[in-house]
Figure 1 (cartoon, rainbow, N blue to C red):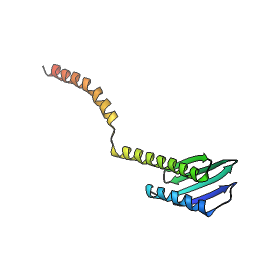
Figure 2 (cartoon, rainbow, N blue to C red):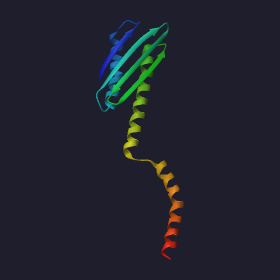
Figure 3 (cartoon, one colour):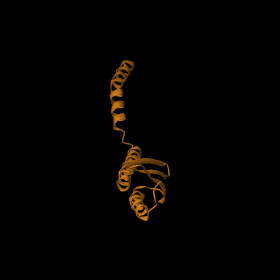
Figure 4 (cartoon, helix red, strand yellow):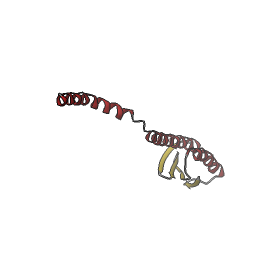
Length: 127
């Protein structure tokens, strides 16, 4: 995963960069294709803001989190990203499995009354 970290109104530190790198390495295992992550860490008065744009093949994820500590902002942002990735993977999995129970149930209810009238029509024609 290609990661770029931008510091806005805050001094850059290697500890924050390594912490972000460690958090983003978890997502590299979850994603199927190589990804690019653009992370912006900024401070506005007492608010510490962590923002990410993650691009991977057809998947585009954006998350923004703010709190009183930069590390807690990064943790909360990572949790949001994890939820979005798992939601996307589950959506893809359901789509590929062809498991469309609600559509099948509705169509069988719709077809069952008409199938009985069709059999009556065939009985009338054959007599």
